Structure formats: C-alpha cells, structure tokens
Image 1 (cartoon, rainbow, N blue to C red):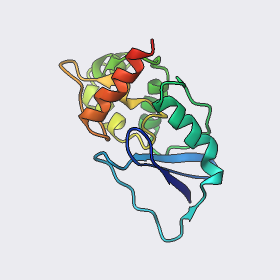
Image 2 (image 1 turned 90 degrees about the vertical axis):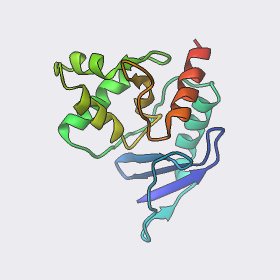
Image 3 (image 1 turned 60 degrees about the horizontal axis):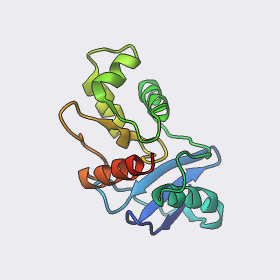
Length: 156
C-alpha cells in the first residue's frame, strides 16, 4: 500500500491506495483514523494529482474528481457508494430518499451504515446525505460536515 499525508484548510488528510486506485481518504482531525502499516510506502509524488484535486475541491475551485477509486466493501456498500457519486454538488439527500432511490424503502439505517463505512469521504460525497431531522453523522465530525455543505452551497 502506498500513501501520502498533507495539510489542508480542513485539517490533515491521509490518502492511501494500491495499483487499482485510491482505497482510503482519512480526515485525520475528525473521528476516523487509519493506521499506516509498517509495509506501507510514502509516495507523495504518486499522489500529487489526487492531493491537488482534493485541495482544489476544499478551496472551492473544483466540484468533482477524476481519480481512480478502489474502495473495498460489500456489494451493498458499493451500490450505496455509487449512488452517493450521483448526488450533485451542492445538493443533499436524506437517508430515506437514498434508500427509496435504491429500491430499498425502509432501509434508511442500512444506507446510513454503508454511508458511514465509506472509506473515501469527499471523493465519494457521503457528507451530502443528511438525516430527515438534521445533519446526521460524519466520519470527520458534524462540524466538518456542516463546513463541507456550506462550502458547496456557497459555490452554487
């Protein structure tokens, strides 16, 4: 596994991936964490494009990404993550709306669990899924989720 770590306006970010693409994006100042393995190799140059795209997004200069993504998860999780990629920049969906769109009405909790297991937040925009009565949770914490949603709504 290769990785890079860099500072952003939203805190330290760790990107990791393999020959198939990016497998993890961790907002290190948030609630999520990822242990860098002893056999991992730091590769700042190899992740330069991904880093630049993430920083441009966080600076409001980019609305989407053109990166190879290779998240690992169950078929259901990958189905949910694919649906997240279809939520437009600046828009939100509730967990219930997403469940309905996936033909799984009543599965809002399962959608929430898959959303929370997303290993590539920002790149797969799980922050765009909100609770019917508020923000809902986020791996980077609710304050970061609110900042990301505000960033996108201010760039419409």
